[in-house]
Image 1 (tube, one colour):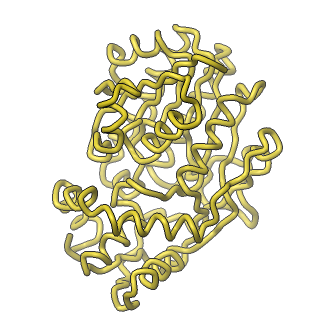
Image 2 (cartoon, rainbow, N blue to C red; image 1 turned 60 degrees about the horizontal axis):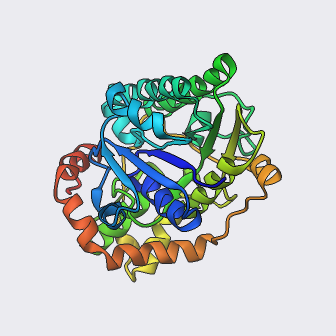
Length: 339
């Protein structure tokens, strides 16, 4: 595909900005538009250099706003919907925000995509929609059993997108990825929170036993999978899991971070478990591998070392974030441990 114009919603966030940078590297002849509301997790610094040089076009707007969406959709060939409220903890506190952005916002995008004849609409879902993985990793045809308002809102958007393929023939592809990590991730998420807390000499709040397990992927390996699915013919109406097979518990991750920064386990503080805490997330990604040939390129160990080092080297990026709105959220989420 040459000369494509891609609209990336939520492109100033963690996964979105990493994907936009990858698009510019891997598809230099494609044009890229970014639409982002710039909520707390959307950071203009994530793509500052690409905006300033004119390598991408940035539009400040909400996916729930038809007037913001329509003109961008009219220009687009491909849409990658990464705009979402994404944090489980916040969804427990502010469920309505998640329903509005994740479900209604996706509806607005789908309606505009249908009106303008988009070539491909990639809906970014999550492995959270499955709830707990059974004795095996979750497969694409497993029941959706979301356990948090975040997971439920993403499940609603996931199935809404699918319905637009079934009802209107919209060329939708749905992805369900495991836990991402890498540079520029907002420090409410486990890895950046714990790395930066260690650097600040603050405790590491581990929910419950810390034995809950997740599957982990570097954000660039996720981006490569999305590129494969944009290019792959004949996948409209299908759903693809994206994962690495690397399953580690919260405690595993925490202890790796502490060791890598030369600190002791005394920083680890167990706190009351959160409601509806999923015991295990894991997915079977064989369908994606068989269809596209995609495989993760980065080992967990090398990607984790590079990620930790990025936060060590980039305090100027994360320190302002942790001194703002984040502090009130942290106090509420972790019951007085201090921000």
